[in-house]
Image (cartoon, rainbow, N blue to C red):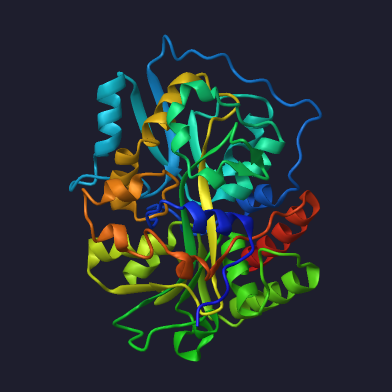
Length: 404
């Protein structure tokens, strides 16, 4: 029997209005774990100067270049893997030259690299960045992003209606969703022929030293908390979080967990360094397409996490109008569908499912691309943390990573 539809407002919104497409933030071909220095930066309490930085002047009229920082394999590619058809079309239509940079391995390491420049209002080298809800919330609170001129993003009207108001950005004045997705579990079907159903299955002795988990705290700890019976979208506190941290630390110390990484975890799956992992679902679709149908993804029986990555314009960017033009372009249903057909993540653009019928009708019915109520009822959004909780819980998670 399907679990009751969650009361979490974000899932309610997705159930009522989602126009989706699975998700795939493919691996960054670097990622050999997280450096201690980066983790130390990431674990710092989110705070900033008393005076928030001022937005840089816009030079889009005279400088027709733009840099977009994103996660790996999060944009459509041609067969060579070197071109992005939708982005090529945008450049041809607008005359704006876009440098697309796979610069995000996980939220914390990216933030650790740019936070000092953001605090000073300096250019971080990127004019558009896609980061996850909780990190976007932090950056908005600190004044590190520019406010949109929504008159220059008319296609924002295509945003799934009930995603237009979120607690960290009411009215979507400073962020707009790029893609969304689930975190769940995956395994090598050849090496684990019986498959997996739950997070607890990752702790089976037969998988000792061959398990990978994500360096995104909300996904790894979120899945463990769900396994322990905690609804991560509602009120919970230190005792529930600490119980999950204790389990996580035990599996690391016992050698059950081999790797803790961001996008780079996929390289470990491909090399069979790990045979099972906490993962992002779209990634598995992509590596199956690349390297043979060897892996399978599932939302665990106790539930998976649900998230969105969002466009934002950093405070020091001098290409605000050009960035808004790019965002507006990707909110066209036909363009959103083309991206979704390749990346297999949840698109927030109304009309993308209908447009997908013209690309591949089968994709329009895929539950990991356009999930129905039953599929969405298996997912939870990790609740918003206070600044004190963010600091405390991140420190606890990073302490395990630093000791792994």
